[in-house]
Image (cartoon, rainbow, N blue to C red):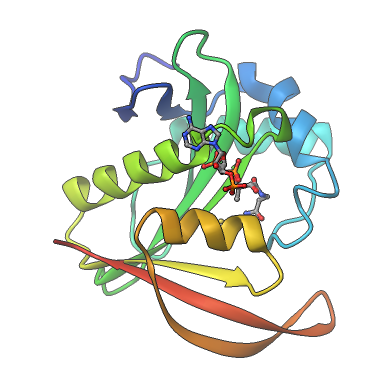
Length: 176
Ligand SMILES: CC(C)(COP(=O)(O)OP(=O)(O)OC[C@H]1O[C@@H](n2cnc3c(N)ncnc32)[C@H](O)[C@@H]1OP(=O)(O)O)[C@@H](O)C(=O)NCCC(=O)NCCS
């Protein structure tokens, strides 16, 4: 934990800094091809993952134009079960968000809890007016997740993902 308090605590999960201690769990789900199927990232080698976790352990959260990755941990055990990426736009008007959950922790509402907590945290810690989620139209569980959070689909655009044409749904949640 690097002496840092948790960023946010919900009923069953906490949002906290990633650390090198998370390496095995992080790699456990990040190297699963199903988990990364519609994600912008590719799996890291163990060395790259260790560097990434150390970097995120020290990084300033929510700087504009820079992706920051938060850990999602089980509230009881503090074990890592997923992560949330956040990037506040250069003009600080909105932030993009993306979430990954270990398959062993899916199907229990934990991602919904984590993304609600992240939205609260972002609106409380920054000046942004909107949270944006960009989802491949084939990624049904993620679409359901954003809609459970109350995000509204604002546009669908043609895109290229891993050299293949696809459609992306853009969702947004406004500060209330
Ligand atoms: C996106 C992702 C995190 C969603 O995970 P998830 O497990 O479906 O979402 P939740 O943890 O909120 O669980 C919701 C499911 O649990 C069920 N559930 C069971 N118990 C529940 C409870 N106590 N409370 C709420 N939901 C519960 C819900 O009915 C829901 O199932 P449904 O979608 O079949 O209706 C997951 O699919 C994932 O990591 N995908 C790969 C990463 C990815 O593509 N990310 C895209 C960027 S967002």
